[in-house]
Length: 120
Image 1: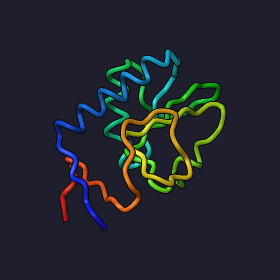
Image 2: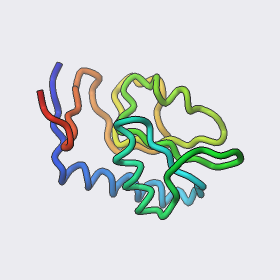
Image 3: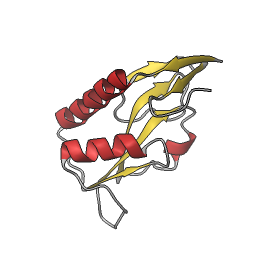
């Protein structure tokens, strides 16, 4: 499998682009949650930028679910309901779930290495 190393510069630029897309949608959210582990960093960043709390789900909330990538879509599939809107930095071709917001699309044979990960 090929690798794509994402630099810190690209990662921050893509996070800022994702925030802009969410902001331009004019959708209102009560809460942001991040999917363990990859979604935590982008979710906290978006939470700060949009000044929306990050935390635990309570009833009757409009929630933005954030992850780093929708690879197969299996993880995001468990968050499909009317209270959830989804955002990822990246998607891969053929993902089962295309999030409401994303920045870049990669071929399914690419392995993404994030700037905060140790490259093997």
